[in-house]
Amino acid sequence: MTRIVVLGSGFGALATVRALRRRLPDAEITVIAPSDHLVLYPGLVGVAVGEQHAGTTRVNLGEFFDRQRVNYVRASVQGLVRSGRTVLTDVGEIENDVLVIATGAGKMTSPVGIEHTLSICSSPETAEEIHRRVRRLRRGTIACGFGGNPAEPAGARGGPVLELLLSLDADLRRRGVRDEVELVFFSPASNPGERLGSAAVRRVMGVMTRRGIRAHFGHRLQGFDEGRVITDGGDVVADLVVYVPGLTGPSWAHSSDLPLSPGGFIRADRGCRVLGHPGVYVVGDAGAYEGVEDWMPKQGHAAELQGVTAAANIASELAGRARRRAFRQELVCVLDGMDSAVMVYRSRHASLAIPGRCWRRVKRALEARERRRYGR
Ligand SMILES: Cc1cc2nc3c(=O)[nH]c(=O)nc-3n(C[C@H](O)[C@H](O)[C@H](O)COP(=O)(O)OP(=O)(O)OC[C@H]3O[C@@H](n4cnc5c(N)ncnc54)[C@H](O)[C@@H]3O)c2cc1C
Image (cartoon, rainbow, N blue to C red; front, side):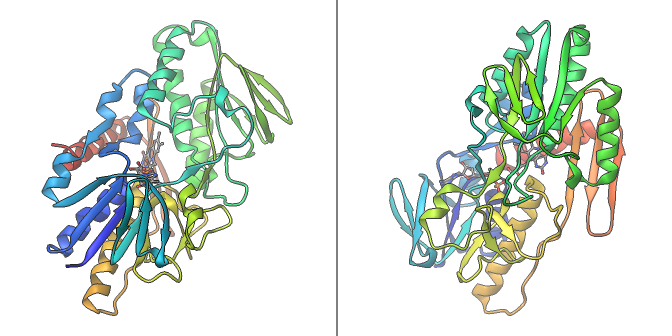
């Protein structure tokens, strides 16, 4: 029986498992991850503004693993040897015939002083802490921003920050304290969010300006201090600083001979095959994929497309078929600002930003689908 090992239990890993089981009913599938819970990251902004409880953003995967006949190993990967055939973990070594890496991205640790900030992209508990801090604030300043990875433009996650700012604006208005609380959006980029496409950026920035969200753009971040964002264009003094660090590859990958991109991500082709490593695949945020458009995002949607592609190619390879698939290049997201929303779509042929409150319902329905798919 073919032993397939999947590293991680996020969107990329789980989409891979589902597609693998459909194609290879008899394969032995093992998932190695530190937790058997899926975090529904798109719900974290809702937690930060008190629309959702942290508990609703965490899905127990026990029954999904049973249904898919997955052996779950609670462990953290520490490295690979024998060209990926042996996985080193904190509970011992695990062998495989095929390996799928889906451990997500790592976080940049610069600039200095990140410990004085809270990230909306970290965990449901941190999102709750943001909510508590916002609720306590009756006057003052909230500064929100995101950084990048200087070695790799794809190493940035700005969408949740845009959503958070619009949602905070709506929440503060509802509570009648918006006039007393200033919102500041800081970014070292002079045109943050441009990977969403020019139509989307124009629309979102237009909304921010109309809502009085102050922009502090184009100034290099030097660090953070308690209540202070330090940039080479002056400091932003704030009662609460929300900052999403730039993304890099998984740190454990440095203890392997995997090929890494300048930004530290695992290099693969568009069939998700890791370069020069037969039988080793990467899906989701951990990968740097050859031949993709500059705007291709690190997104749950992309991770799922990559998982399905990797599974198809694994099945082809095991069957000795020559046909190989490449994943579709596509960006789809809903920026939900509580009392407004915009659906952003980008492909090689189109770049759209369509506003409408209905997108809020679509987003909630998609979250509910993920809960059903992976939960009880
Ligand atoms: C606040 C927020 C909102 C978002 N909104 C959207 C959205 O609306 N639409 C969208 O498409 N995308 C969205 N995203 C992006 C999306 O969540 C990610 O792109 C997606 O989760 C990437 O999936 P992944 O499987 O590659 O990695 P992850 O989801 O990060 O999963 C990585 C997995 O690997 C495990 N792992 C980590 N280290 C190890 C190790 N050493 N050993 C074993 N396992 C390990 C983790 O525990 C986890 O299970 C959002 C992200 C955030 C943070």
